[in-house]
Image (cartoon, rainbow, N blue to C red; front, top):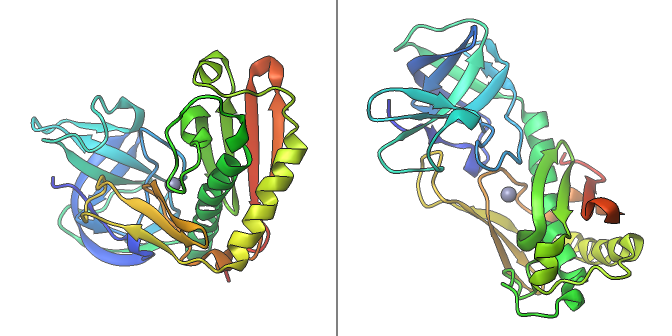
Length: 279
Ligand SMILES: [Zn+2]
């Protein structure tokens, strides 16, 4: 099989393609097509959940990343033994179905647009919240640290342990342990409510600005290294990203975070909520 061409980066939720192959997924059938609008769960950084929808009229019960080696063997999700996009492998969007479809058949692909829109809103909000958190914590760094695209110490990249996009929001967990302290970050007297207040003030301004959001797409295949861009009033923000997004921050209508700090676990959890979803 060839690497799947994906159309979700340009916002598409429907398409028509040919069944290029079928791989077993437990008792289910993993349908692979030449080109799809479906966003699968990424196997290395599983932040945005798989799209929902139908293929050839059949429900897509899950959508995962597959990788086929040059010997023809297909690995799925966490079993993929090589890094994302490794050369010599075909990178596949695997639509999991209870029923098979015949290889070579044409099939309509339809993504649930409301669920996608809610995930896109959550994902854009997640990136904006990360940048606003970097700004709110910038004064806590005592050593030089890699800056984010807006020139602030990149707390998000230095400390994040997991990021989960949910419909209309996200949950990001950061670790404020010894290794972050060694990099120069001080969590002393950290008041989560105060930091959240600063983050929310900035988010309000960014949403009000109606900043355009776009994805830079260097190639049509699943594992192309795409980059999220947002033209914020204070500069052009960019973050490497494999997911989907709204096209303007004003589509979010409102974004708010809450922060919870558990010092005994050295964990800072940021919950981001989009108040009104995309119409
Ligand atoms: Zn992203």
